[in-house]
Each structure stands twice: as structure tokens, then as C-alpha cells.
Image 1 (cartoon, rainbow, N blue to C red):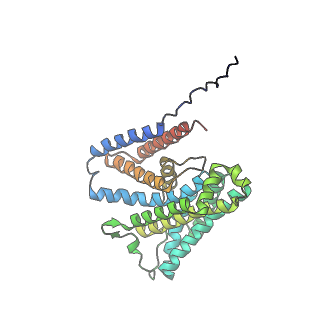
Image 2: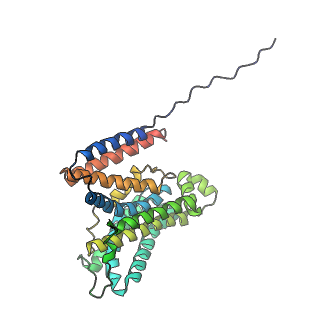
Image 3: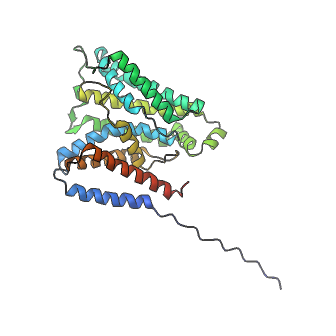
Length: 321
């Protein structure tokens, strides 16, 4: 009597522990306790301040998300681009509001998009390219402006409404919400967005499918350039002046928002909505630390620890791949 061979017993698949979710829950609990014990945190004025702070970072994070999703790491020239766009916007106001806005957005589109084309066309390292581009841009603007602040001319169109509250909420917050909605629709609901996910998730498959890598890379960076232009317009209107020193840590805050939102550094995975949530969370953390009297270096230290934990746990949750 012949015996039927039994199928081999496969080893049990090890279930990955959702470390990232655990970290997020624990961190939110800590943030909740800290905010409850912080005087003035739960006030309407402070909520407006948090949203206003998150708006500029969040708008830039939307553009940075497109670059990360495309698998092109980060652009380290975005902060400089925002500052230059603010200066350009204020300089162009003498020609009217519409030309100033369109000219600023076109500048951001081209100056950042060209960097993306170089990355996609020649396979250049995006970190090196964007550092070099930022240095060149900063040097050129310093030479042209003489290193002084830029102010709108006396004939400039009125721009105060760009920084004024609307229904008690800062106007940049409404722009932030609109940019997030458009960014999410672009990434999730268009062929361009789906191709970015494919290119970032599997570059070999993208090339095998004959996707236009150079144009996609240009497009991802160009989206970030438009976001930088919008942020520059709002920042220039709020400060009523433009200088290269106004952006501070804006580049790193935007990148931190994208990473805290769970986007994969290696590309192919990310969400504009989560990046926007990361921007609000970062703004809330900074605000809470500020109200508790911590200095800016301590705030940067805490933010760095949060980002490092999220990236490491996110990578561990994917099995170290």
C-alpha cells in the first residue's frame, strides 16, 4: 500500500511588530500630557499660531513629498528657493499682483525643476545637485541684491490680504488646505502621480515600462518649486520684506514633516495628507516647547530625535529592506 507524501510543514511567518504605530500612539500620549500641563496651549490664539506656523512648513512639505515619493531623496535648496521667491515677489509687486504671483511661481517651477531634470537625466545625486544649486542661487541673489533686504516699492499693489486673517483664521492656513487637497489629488488621482509612485517604488520596473524618467523627475521637483513659490509669496507678505536669512530651518522642518508623516526615504510610499499632519504635529511640538521655555537648540534636538525614531522604526517595520 503506497503512502501519500504529506506536504512539507512550512515555518511560521514571523509577524512584524507595528513599532511605528506603537511609537506614534506613545508619542501622542506624551504630547497630550505635555500640552495639558502647559499653560496657554489650549487657547484660541495659540491654536491660530500653531496653524499659521504649520501652514508654511506644510505647503513646502507637499512639494517635498513629491520628490520623496519619486525616490529622489530630498531637495536641500528649497529653503533658499523660498527666500528668493519672497524677494522676487516683493520686487515684482510694482508690476501688479497677478504678474508678481505668476512670475514668482514660474521662477520656482523652473529653478527647482531644472535640478530634478539633472537628477533624472544624468543620474546625479539629488543631495549634491540641490546643495550646489542652493549655493549658486544664494550667491547670485546676494550679488544682485547687494546682500540687503528687499522691500516692495511705493507703487506696489496691496498685498496685506495675503497675511490678514479670514474669519479669524490666518489666510495662509486656507492656502495650506487648498495646496494639500490639490497635492493629494495630483499624486493619487493622476497618471503623473501614479507614475511617480512606480518610479520611486521600483526604478527598474519603471525603466522597463519605458516611463519618462527625466520628465517625471523634472515634474516632481517642479511641484516642489511651485510649493516653494507659494510659501515664498506668503512669507514675503507676512514679513513685508525679503532676505535670504528669513527661512531659518524651513528646509529641514519640511523634510521632517514628510518623514514624520511616514513617507519612505527610499521612495514609492508617501502621502500628502500624512505630510500635512506631520507639519501640524511638528508645529505643535515646537509651540509646546516654546511655551515651556525651552530654547531653539532644545527644540531642534527634540525634533531630530522624533524624526530619527520615526525613520528607524519605519525601516524596521519593513523588515530592514
